[in-house]
Image 1 (cartoon, rainbow over the protein chains, first blue to last red):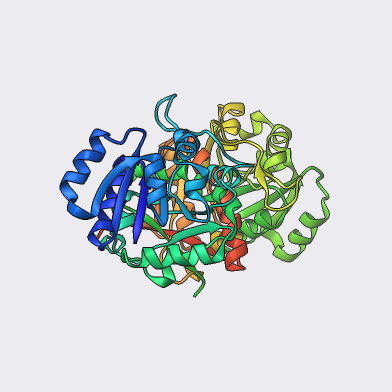
Image 2: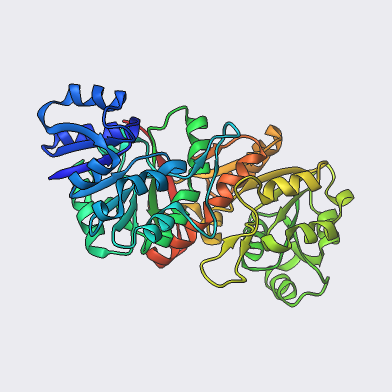
Length: 218
Length: 218
């Protein structure tokens, strides 16, 4: 499948590399078509890897991942273009973190709104699926690296889009029973507001390589 | 030990009952010394159970639990009285949930502040320990009812107070390795902002009897 990855940071690169390793054609997108980080990534990953502008990348992808920084996501998606994203699954991995006042970050949007919802509202013809934003990139792409089963959340208005995202993530090693569908895109509030606890835990555990497992009654 | 429970709702009653069952003397506190819910609870729990005003209860307890609704916690604690709470552990179980616009609730305080921090700030001579607020009352008092080990958070500025709270909760059935000390009281932000996800999960799982387990690397 042709997959577009918006954002050439560590999360975008890690997801892009995983997708190439699974045989997909992957374009990584930045503001500039000749972005250095993107060029380096392409060089490492051969014929199935390419780079381009946000717009090129959105046009290329049958599925498009938003791996841009939360503070810049709406602008990046505007550059990607509504027409290029039309009718497509837009897998939103971003978090609206504000690092401007140092650590720990606060959230730029929270409580009665979320970035996931804002993206869906600005791109009503795309199928936004919020997922993976509560998990560090090493665990996203290598879920079996943890010592037990653990939980991945999905939120979005389109059930078929969530099913397709789930099927794609299962090829990463996620297991069917690890997914929890939280319902429509308003559930982005919960998963984004989880980040302050996640960041705090990363500090205490001294690693981002952890996740939560939901434990129910005996 | 003499323990004061501020708040005669379901969380306060469940904790109070557990503490009585463990042999403690427990006073449950409300605005009024003759609150109906409190009176019913006392009737059921015999000689070690009593009720009183918030002030009576704070005076009585060597440890005091805040189980009042988040929106009313500061007022209830003001009624409890700074002198009565002086030098004591104030175990804060509350969440600043706003149900005024229906379900799901939003938070009255969040992101760059938290109720736990506000309580510590208003009662600087008390040792606020934020804990249990991410867990339903049945799981708080019966942690072994779940099918696997799971995680309980502690936050607060006083290490000795956190140690004492942990020791008390271990008598409920919590295990030493299930506690994660998130550091100072500012970690209340993370555990309070976790509530929107918790509420969403309760809806999806159709029960509040669940918790998270942190899963680390192999």
